[in-house]
Structure formats: C-alpha cells, structure tokens
Amino acid sequence: MQILEDTFWSHRQLQSEFAAKRGWGRFHQPRNLLLALVGEVGELAELFQWREEVQTGLPGWSVSEREAVAEELSDVLIYLVSLSEKCAVDLPRAVLAKLEKNRAKYPPEQVYGSARKYTEYPQ
Ligand SMILES: Nc1ccn([C@H]2C[C@H](O)[C@@H](COP(=O)(O)OP(=O)(O)OP(=O)(O)O)O2)c(=O)n1
Image (cartoon, rainbow, N blue to C red; front, side, top):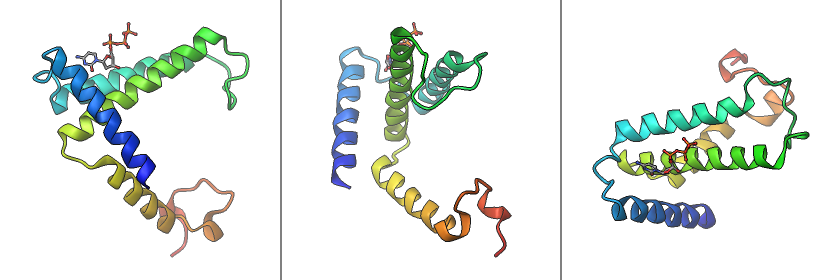
C-alpha cells in the first residue's frame, strides 16, 4: 500500500528533522520514546475518564474537547513512529503483515458478530 508507506516516511522524516534541529536526538532513545508514548496514551485516556459511555463520533463533546483528542492522538502517533524507527522496525510493512495475520486468524465466516478471541474458537 504505497500511500501508507509514503505518509509514514514523510511523517518520520518531519519528526526526525524536528528532533535534530533541537539537538534532541540523544534523548530520543527507545526507552524514552516508549515512556513518552505511554504518557501520551495516559493523557488521551484522561480525556475519556469519568464519563458515561462515549458513543462513536463523540456526540456532545465540545470543540475544544475534540481538539484535545486530536492533539493527544497525534502525540501518540508521533512517538509511535519515532519509536518504530529507533527499534529498526519498518512500521508500514509490519502493519500490513499484521493485518494479513489478523485476517487469517479471524475468518469472517467463523467469527462474524462475535468479539471472542481466536483461542476461544474450536479448531
Ligand atoms: N523531547 C521531546 C518533546 C516533545 N516532543 C514532541 C512530540 C509530541 O508530539 C510533543 C509532546 O510535547 P510535550 O511534552 O510538551 O507534551 P504535550 O504536547 O502533551 O503538552 P502538555 O503536556 O502540556 O499537554 O512534542 C518530542 O518529539 N520530543
């Protein structure tokens, strides 16, 4: 999927430039990036905590709340992309391979309408 790869590599390039221009390369090590990623997931979770059930599309959320969700999702993605680079993982390729694996693990005719884990289906 060329578009996925192109988007990914452009994003990775922008993030590398951002860090290099600030002399932050030495901080962007796998462990730090993982901790930063988890921190941003926490900030995203904070936006959803103590609410009633949240429906698809976030009906009833204010503009600023929606902007906050977009920002935190972006932070998560930014750190995820950097982390994949520092772990020498080709993320677009890995994602496509994982999607293929998921398709094989969860055949539609077997699992349609059920959210059970693949280990719970009879072989
Ligand atoms: N050493 C750093 C610091 C920041 N960033 C980038 C990646 C994130 O997209 C964003 C994170 O910035 P902050 O640490 O200021 O966190 P927030 O943007 O979440 O701000 P706040 O904590 O005020 O919500 O900046 C980075 O790449 N490397």
